[in-house]
Length: 460
Image 1 (cartoon, rainbow, N blue to C red):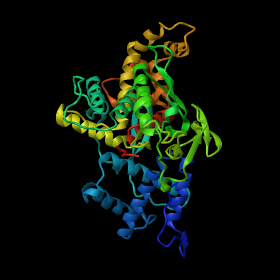
Image 2 (cartoon, rainbow, N blue to C red):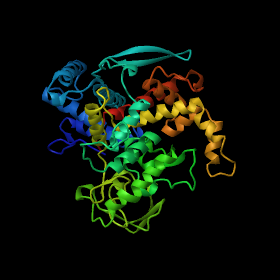
Image 3 (spheres, one colour):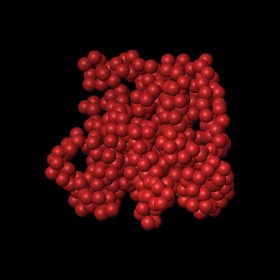
Image 4 (tube, helix red, strand yellow):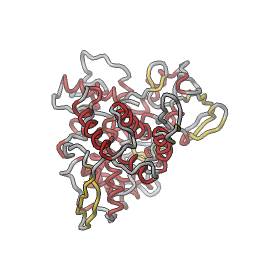
């Protein structure tokens, strides 16, 4: 947990509890105050800290009266929109920060630390599925481009072009000339896995090599389930996604050749700033001895996973670089590949970040589910086959519910709203879930919006 400290390291003075100490109390309550993801905590605290520092520069305290806080907010908005380049926020980032500050001030008022709020709220009324619901709109929010005018996922031809770019291939599939990249087998295999399975960046970045599902004994058209451990998923919720047979074959080829060569005899150890090395012995698919203590992989979070040292040397992560070091800079890999495609082949090609692979998976999978693609494949499975359970699931569940489970959403309503934000021309009206209460709607709105927060994230 990140915390805020004053230069003299004091928490109280003659006026009582300092604002920094109040911020720390709020920070410690974030995990139980609808912010369960540990990846989000630093962002919330940083938003309040930067606001507090800006106020100090202008002589306005964190809990001053409403008038000075409103005036400060106006100055802050100008600073973030037209100030120095390094200080400017895009509209989406500004709106995220305003939401975080709004959550902080609501908590501070509720707990008696202040009575002043820098924001002005307006009441909004909306109609959804015949039900009227009301909400509050923060007037400090900046207008953003509507979802239907923003490219959030790749159509099939662009997705194919991007995956070939990761593999150093020309659009026609031949080897790309004049480009010398590294780790192409890793980039191509993991990139294809992302587009075929839809994990979040943290989920595929910190997946261990031994957690990759084994290849089925025979080729199968039914996807293979991919368990995603709760300790690396958003919100700490275990879920299964899936992967097609050909993608899994490519992933195993990377594991058997390029990755095996990279970690063989590696002397890599995590740097001291990461913490104590976690030396693994007696490892299997479910767990191993970590510094002599038997542990399950599913209980290890990202911080522990990147410190794992495999029995034969090198990192335990699926993606490695150099002499067995863990690799996490996927934003950079995707950015360079999309830049190269745009410069050499297709000027219209968009910027691609890892979360766009998840968006692409969602749209491609939903199209196949709605068209009956997976249901037709499932009908060919015999009752005694190993994938019979998944086949039964595909034939007996609504497509929207299947995609909900694959993406890890809490409700089908969230999944529907998520799909609508990806592409408003694809509204699956006949697949609406019965859950349409205002409380469920607000929860679905919030969860669907969080899917797009990761679009602006940098490398881990």
